[in-house]
Length: 379
Image 1 (cartoon, rainbow, N blue to C red):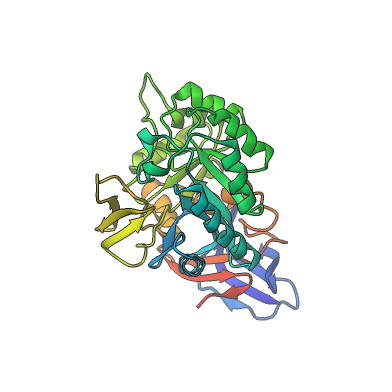
Image 2 (cartoon, rainbow, N blue to C red):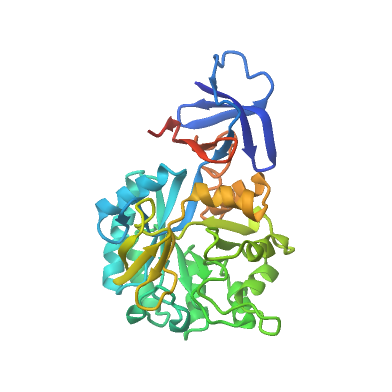
């Protein structure tokens, strides 16, 4: 048994201050305030830090100098890098590429899931996207939603494809959403030029997530509201790349102030590329050159944003200190809501008895101090 004491323990409903967490191996067995259970031992004093559940990133392409699409080894190394920044569960995002290339990459993801590396599956960010809103996705490999292509991809993933981003206005887009929902895969709306009505139709057909809200989609206008207001009206969670570059804090606050806002309707993601943790320079994403300057990643060809150099610990800190979120809501957005969307809420995503001991310790200024995965502190 391991007892963690002297922390501000962030749960989905509030903060235990001071709180304690009792672990049995890789599992949380009890939490509380005041005196721990008898026989718990002296405990490990966490010095008044903030203890949060491990972060779950639904949208990430690489990090630490490693691109997930280069090789199985690079995928593992990139995931390991993000674990040191608090991401204890990773949904590997694959950029648009030929179906043959994606099938090979999906095999790497499935193998990583089988090895228990913290990879929980794959997110296909393409190839069923709108050319007009493709952003840094390679337009040469975009295709109309194709049931056969989707079946090939799902088969290659061996049940590990968890999210697929679709532009619902493309021919066959709404039918593809039906196919995804029937297969138990989260259909996300993104890289889309869909108007409000078409986006709402996608949600009515079962789409249940917005890929990086505000980015790669029709803008929000008072007469043509577009995808984000449709998501808010439908109560569908929105991903947010909270680096201060992709979305202004004032726009982020709009998501929170809507009737469907809050931590349970917001998903903090990184959209990080291999440059994350490395520095400025020239990189490649989906076969296209990317220049990173002052931490901003942009296509060399046209200056379009090309992912980010964000990590989840920074996203959470900015959510509280810049956007103005309550730390409980920020934690839910970084852990609880992603776990729920992936069907993992019975295993992770919160500090609660019976869940995995995936924990992140932040200091007084909400900067990363320690990371625990499966009951063991990472070096």
